[in-house]
Amino acid sequence: MTKSLAVAAFAFALAACLPESNTISTAHAENAVAVAPRGLPDFASLVEKVGSAVVNISINETVQPDDANPFGSDPFLDFLRRFGMPGQGLPGQPGVPRARQGIGSGFIVSSDGYVLTNAHVVGSESTDVTVRLSDKREFKAKVVGIDRRTDVAVIKIEAKDLPTVAIGDPDRARVGEWVAAIGSPFGLEHTVTAGIISAKARRLPDENYVPFIQTDVAVNPGNSGGPLFDLNGRVIGVNSQIYSRSGGFMGISFAIPIDVAMRVKDQLVRHGHVQRGRLGIYIQEMSPELASSFGLDKAQGALVAQVESGSAAERAGLQTGDVVLKVDGKEINESSELPRIVGDSQPGSKVRLEIWRDGKRREVTAILDKLPSENAEQAARGDRNKDVQGALDKFGLALRALDVREAARLGVRGGLLVETVGGQAAKAGLRTGDIILALNSQPVSSPAQFRQSLDKAGKRFALLIQRGNSRIFVPVRLN
Image 1 (cartoon, rainbow, N blue to C red):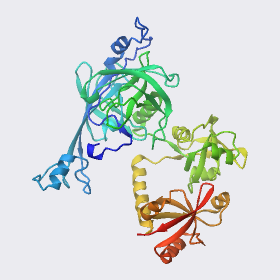
Image 2: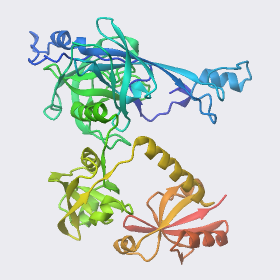
Image 3: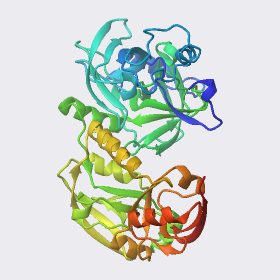
């Protein structure tokens, strides 16, 4: 992030912006670390036991430029472009590939050369990856697999009898316990930092599959992919992200729990990709107000906001307004737990869902679909975005009619759900999820009808919308 783009708000930053590397414990780190004379943890002994299994990872990758923005975020190249300075053939010009270099961390999880790191460290499966051990030996590495949903990658070097880490149990780790990280912040190899666990099961924006461990361990660019150790010298997490205004350490960092990373690692080694189950619902968090309105004693579970047509959820009979309370007996306390539990299940497997509907507990069984691969999902998302952009009217809305069940549950007749909002509609204050009931007091029940009414409305009109349990009029003035 350049200074010119800096904003007052904090931003999540991947900890592998520049250099990255990590260090991890040996496979035989079974005994607890001794306590120093003053009662503080003996980090020196810990590092002696675990350091040899931590590796430095350097990558070289050829990146094809985006012709729409060939200079990317490089301020120097953009300066040359803006002021017409000579630069024929400069990286970043349309059609001219540029090299990306970076350094990260990783740790050895098997003596025959499997190394765990972050997906954002590796970049892509075609990346040229070099692994450097603590004894200065270097190996070219093969990218075994990448899972961007969890930010986990596995690479392989051809070597034998390598030191490995001991795997810990993040569930047994407690908030307030001491932990240590080993990595290469800003390229300074095998740097050791220490702190405590600040919180567990943190959910970050756009992250549905990782219950992050939050720490105050100093993690900076270059630490990504490195191990987070408990005082027994066992790895309990993979350092992945920082919360920062400047891109540097500010006392808040996040690690992927090692049990999550190892499950992904096993699938990447076995299949080259990760297979996940899928229900096909859109969910939202249960607030105390929503829980009260649904007749629940407390805010728990995942509220079903939409059921996809033809999905496993629809086949199981799930409906909009259901609250998923348990999956195979596991309680859903936070809505973010549902995608993770379902994702850990294999496609085609049966799951028992305990749901809350009409003031009663019920049980349904769903046979899970397969979650599309990341490439397929991105392609589908791109197609949907094209469709949405094509569907946006001059007002800046993409709409769909409510189905009978949704309308009945909301207590409305007709109505249009706002799926995407932009342009004039966003300026007027409309939000995704609003229900448009009428335009200038004329009820609307289809997107085509709404557009016809919009064409006749002129530059000023009012929309009656339902937002949550409230109905309000939104005055609109088109530019």
